Length: 436
Image 1 (cartoon, rainbow, N blue to C red):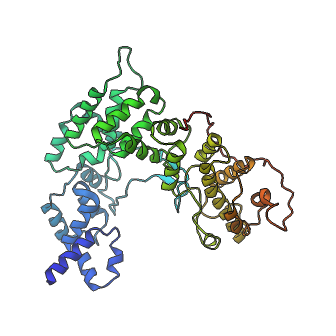
Image 2: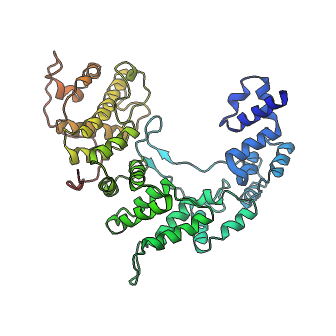
């Protein structure tokens, strides 16, 4: 029984993201964290067999032991060529350091993502962190597209994660070969049978047509949706054996991801027109997914460290122009905008020496303030549940349009507001949506 108890602890340990939390619990958990077998299980689960040894070394001499390496090798962990390259690069150095590849940088990452900026640093080769850089991954993906059986060769040497590592690149590359950005003069749009056959060749060796791949493919061809949009949807239906409604709705959600540039809404408009329900019903589903609403009450908002827009303000601008100030969708968006704007005022009341609340970027600040003014200028209706929030604020810009409703406040604010916050939004083409 005691042995079973110990094995259960090892299984639990394997799934813990940061083991330090267990180390501090009691001596039994500390003993688990020192067990070479438990450490090997944790590394393989977290990083895969391809990178387990790499990260064992990266974690330093306090972590790696002979017993740990032995357990990793017994579990068929791979000594990758990138690991060897990194070791060779460190010869003569006092310390061999391994850093993970930089992740995406968000303007606002504490609670809600305002906008994503990709790292533009130049890729080095061999990679300093032991991982493939984007250039090399693209080369691998192209090679697989030419000769898919290469996947079997990698799996034979223990690289079982090859499909998951390059899945999105390979699948998107397949669509780019099917629908080239600059088609040759003799190019003919393939039919659905040809597209499905090509995709099934890749699925046969282990790749997957995930929801992410579908949405990324739509985004990739957002300027050609009138030409190939219906063909893409039909192909997705056959491969995934799902209804058109299920596919379109899942992709509709992902079109508002923070990392999207939101320069135009061609894809959003296409998907809304394809879904078999009223446009506002479809959008409400998306807004609820991103929790576009009041998130706090009049007391808890004072304690919030961050309150920013749930989705990009360009989308809110698009909604206002498409559906007008009186639609339920517009009013739901305004709830999110108003609460974010009130939060800014509360934080500036706490720190009057600041121009922008701590943790909020200038672009996020301008985005919130300018979209608030736009909604005010278009006279989005006042709702009774705004009253407790508005009693908290002091900024005349916020309460100006409600001055007649809030008793005792006499302000010299006239609408429309002059929008002085610098924030660029894409122009919206009206009358593009079929409202059913």
